[in-house]
Amino acid sequence: MKDPILVINCGSSSIKYALISREPDAPRLVGLAERLGSPEARLETTDTQGSKREHALPGADHMAALEAILSHLGDTPPVAVGHRIVHGGERFTRAAIIDEDVIRSIHETAALAPLHNPANLAGIDATQRIFPHLTQVAVFDTAFHQTLPPHAYRYAVPDSLYREHGIRRYGFHGTSHAYVSRQADRLEGGTANGWLTAHLGNGCSTCAVWEGKSLDTSMGLTPLEGVVMGTRSGDVDPGLHAHLGRELGWSLDDIDRLLNKQSGLLGLSGLSNDMRQIERAASEGHAGAQLALEVFCYRIAKSLASLSCALPELTGLVFTGGIGENSPLVRHKVVAALPHFRLTLDDAANTSTVRGACQRIDSGNHATPRVWVIPTDEESQIARETQQVLDARA
Ligand code: ADP
Image (cartoon, rainbow, N blue to C red; front, side, top):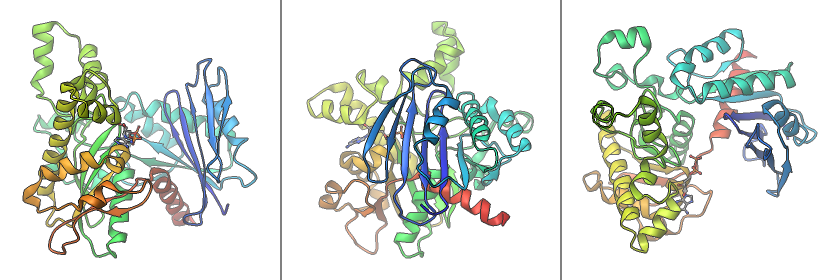
């Protein structure tokens, strides 16, 4: 591998990594350490040929897992480390070299991402100890959305909440929306301007991208706002909290748990947060799964329609994420709910997409917007942004 960059995505009990060569399209080493801190901790590594191996790491913490990962990186050491950081607040509009000041800012923003930023910091700390001489770069999920204009990022609440407490819309999944919209531009020969992107995985969000800049997105202060997700409700009436508190005596923690962990596809179906299972059960007549599917798709279409207000012109729609890349049914239903966009699907193309490939699935009429399926690659976007920071410093 030539001058590889190690990409680290650290969760509270997991570390996803990828060692990515500077040569475009070169095979990469990837892996996932999970259940860290428990007796079942384990590491799954995948080599450049795609073969997987499992390694038990009983009781391993982040540090021990990173040491194990290091021992599987082969003989080309990384030249830098790129960290996925969930929340960069308003300070970070692009990736930044990690120093004391950047670490302090990530700490300060932790109130806005209490589950994610502390885990990201644990990853930085362990990686700095293991690679004390390597440049480490923070790539923020929120940075791509820092181009939102105030009329898109402000909530209609008193100004002091924004000024004193940073209450505004930030948006997430920025690396994915940035990556797929850039790919879409490239696939259209660099002449495309306006994309609606739908990242549909366990977490789901939509984004309006004009000339490479995010102008609006469905997630807000937290990754709960917007469309329906696996276990997250997406938008609800903000009055719901007061109602549940007053009428049912629920605490804020109860409500938070309900909306983040027990809602979405899982809550509506009473069955599962997994779209494959929802689709299977819906086709067998399960009423809850059928409703979950309908609400999920309608709400995505509704979100895309509202985001279209941000675009002077619509070049097309991009589907990505586990559901967006793999579910012809969801794509069909979303497009069918947007007839006024004059989107037309090629049904044969929609149902025969190949896993991992970028494919155009509209009918090919030049007068109507495009519809693309583009596999996301957040790791390669993080490696790219890390490289840009290194190049800018050189
Ligand atoms: P994450 O957001 O955790 O990265 P993914 O992007 O992998 O998650 O997306 C996971 C979702 O993708 C799950 O709901 C899963 O059911 C769905 N999915 C994966 N393959 C298919 C498929 N063939 N058809 C429908 N849904 C799929």
